[in-house]
Image 1 (tube, helix red, strand yellow):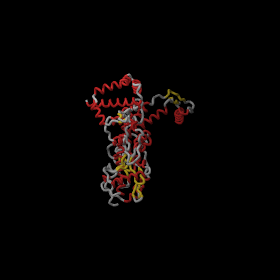
Image 2 (tube, rainbow, N blue to C red):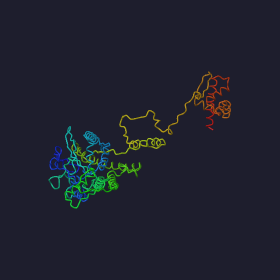
Image 3 (cartoon, rainbow, N blue to C red):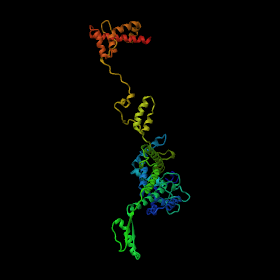
Image 4 (cartoon, rainbow, N blue to C red):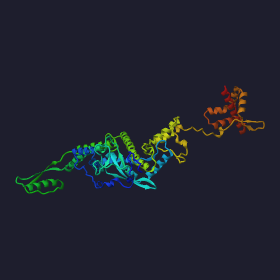
Length: 532
């Protein structure tokens, strides 16, 4: 155990497997938020942000918490961004060209992750780092069937942490030492989310949201004051020259309360005059609030049309563009989060349970961020493209449509009539059904009167012995009634009836033999013309 080092090369201490580091710092357990959003002003906000740059993250962390609790718009937009990742499928994948052992390790870790309780909560807590710049979860370990596994992840408030002076990119617990306490190896999963470039104290998205939050608060307060007096008449109290202090206060109280209570009393000799009602409009305040909220939506989601409609510029096309921006942000967030899980959780599991040789060969935590293509579009286009000869790899189609390829003898969906899945214009044309009148074959009779079917040699011999001119004349004479009927637009059955009418003295057998000989002659004639 003593030889194990963490992902940063720091020696591993066994104490982390049996107790939490924060349990040794009792001062943190009784540390409560200060809520610096109360009475927030531009100078106060600037001071809070400056302290965070110097390493004191406490006030900034408290302010960011207040912003999400007090501003419903910020909460809603941040919730959209964070919870979007909870809808993604994930898996533990072995490295490229894996060995049998690497595959086994990936499968084991994947099954362990699936057994973790409330893993969605773990992901959501880690994504708290989007706003704050970082999020720290303390890991509790337990030995299960001879394997060390994380059994609990506890989110710790950002106000518990600091950055030492001169080391603004190193996170430590606030403790008794001025420089703080270094985080124990394998004891923490710390998600450093790069919403923007900068040190830990300046990397959070809420740094950008702090100023719109402040300006919006001013406008909301002013709007509330305006609505409190809007529509109420201006009350002016008049007192006599000899009125004392108590009488003046009584008149002021009456003037203040009469607007809300519609009743009041004043000393004798004083009066209240009602002037015109308070005038004005709420539009300037709402305009400022709207600007602040649109700015917040742009900062968090990259656009406004997936958050609210302004009734003027909102269109379906623009909404789709903004939604694509949201997808890009989701992919970026997923990649950063997957990197943290691999570094701080998967690495720890591998180091404690496997013979970890090359660190680069660790399993990967992978989110499936592929956006399935339009099924309807591809269902219409692919058969046509394949029908004209385009070679489309099956793996490419599976990837585009986000449909996994079947494994082994896994049952797959199929259609009872595959030809019906092809567009009508690309289906093979079926030959029309052959009627009984069109099923004659060329036959000959032998000396015993038996019908024999000529083979290829007999046809070749007959073709060599019959001159083309005689065949043409004989055919024209024999088939003239049928040919005339067909030229007149009659059906094949009617053409046969015309042939029978032309030879009334022939019985059916003779007509069949006549047709068979005619077809035989036609075959021979065709061969002669084909060789000509």
